[in-house]
Image (cartoon, rainbow, N blue to C red; front, side, top):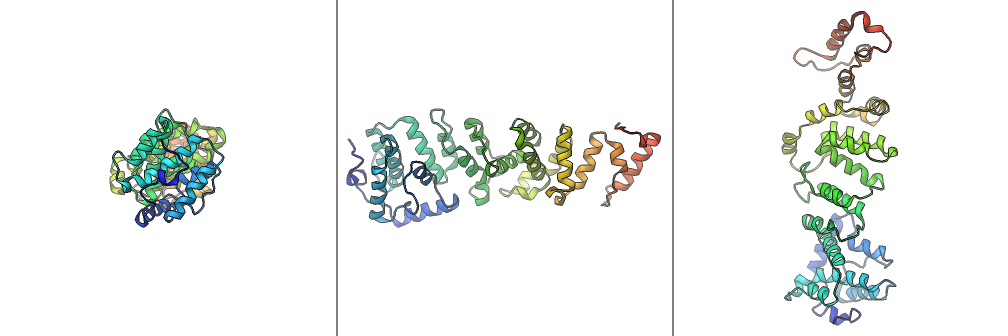
Length: 334
């Protein structure tokens, strides 16, 4: 039976080699400077800064001491030590793996074993395996927003050929239902959703708390009109799967409420969205799509390229002629 306070029994084959420390530090940097193991230490009120990955035998002994002396329940200590043994087991080269022997000997509960496996895989950028463990129904979600953000943001680090077809963030969200408590996670996630399906994202936004709607709608519009927002994968491949033009057509056909309509129009004419490519075109096309022909015909004329001999000025003149004497009627929309 393992005695977790006996350092030499727990770590009989040495501590972290320099190569292992370097690999972990690189993953640490990719994850924004902090691993999820360090988040666990912080959550359990264990001093964590500059202690992981431990440097040499002295560093590992100090980390082991902090874990053993922490005023936390025994199963939390087991989890933290199990994580460290997951780091070291490939270098210990025992059969079965030393971490597995430890977990079985102390009868580590399946839910804790599964969670630590997932966190360890996430920290080592093994995202597919991590999601498989972290969505297991037996575990209580811990750091759900942070995990979702890591899955969404990995495109920025070119950790995979992540494109709009990537399903890991959506799979994790659907299984765990993170609260999305801050804009820091809501904004990247709604952009991810919008890159996959504009219409479904709109209805997802409507199901969110009311105070979030405006900012999320603006993020949806920005993602749809600005192809540069999505920064990962092969852009030519993603464009062929779900072209920007197709997204824009979906956007102008969405059933916005009057309030949403006002938000979007202000965003595209007065707000941050006015600099987006096609912002003014979108406003005009929306008016036509919704039958607001009087507003379209009497609005400011936009200069631009002609397409097949037709530009906005010509189109407006045609609409005016088509409206005829009805053009000035108040409230005329059809």
